Length: 330
Image (cartoon, rainbow, N blue to C red):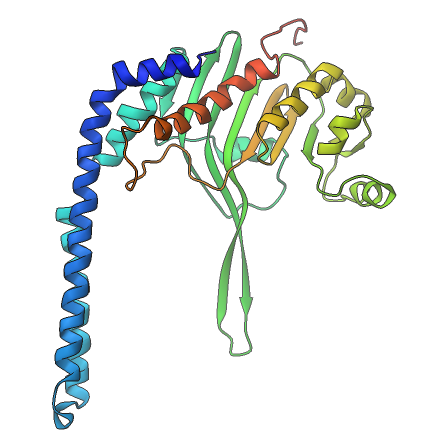
C-alpha cells in the first residue's frame, strides 16, 4: 500500500508539470467564461433599459416581440461564444489522462483505467444489493486489474428509477429517484458459495420492533440472519438465502474487518456475496474523479482527494484480507 508521503513525492516530482499546464488552461476557461457572462448580463441590462425608456406609445405588441427577440439573440450568442471561445474541448479528457490515470498507475501498475467505461447494470443488479427497477443507469472512471491475487473492478455509477404522476388537468410529471450514487466495487472472492448473502446498513437500530420490521422485508428472497457479533449488528443487518452459508461467508474475522472499514469510511456501505463474487457499494454525494474549475489544480490537498478515493477502493482487498487464499473455490 502506497503511503501519503510517497504520493506527495510523486505529486511534486512527476505530476506537477502537467498540473501546472492544466491549471493555466483552467484559469483561461474561468476567465473567458466570466467575460462572456459579464458581457451577456450587461447586454441584457442595456436592452432592458432601452426598452423601458421607450415612449409609452411605442410599447405595443410589436415592441414586446422585438424586445424578447433581442434578449433571445443575446442569450443564444452568449451560448455560442461560450461554447467556441471560452470552452476548452479537450480539458476534461486531458485531466483524466494526466491526473487520474497516473494516480491509478501509482497506486498499482497492475491496474488499468478507462475513463469512459463503468461497471455494467447487469453486474449492479446481479449483486442483489438494490432490488429497485432501474430506468436510467450511468457511470464512468472504470478501474480494473489484479491486486496481488485478487481480480477487482470498480467505477462510479448512478442508478435511478422514475415515477410518473398525472394531475387533475391531465398533465403528466416524471420524477427521477436515485437508487444509488457512488463507488461500486467487485472482487473475485476467495470462498465458494452457492447462495446470496447481503449486508445492508442498519437503519432501524436494535430492539424487538426493529427486529420485527427487518424480518418483514418481503421484497427479498433472502431471510434475516442473526449473527453473534454485537458491534457488527449495530451497524449492519444481514439477509441470506442459507443461514449456514451466510455464517460461513461472514466469518468472525471478516465481520471485524468490515466493521473497522466502516469506522474509517462512514459513508453508507452495502455489501453482498453472490456467485463467489464480493460486491461493495459505497455511497457518495460528490462526483468522484472530476476536475474542479474553481480550485487550483496544483494544490496537493485537491489531488490528494483523488488519490484517497482510489486508494480506498484498492485497499478493500487488504482491509478485508481478500488475498488470504486459505479456502479453495470449487
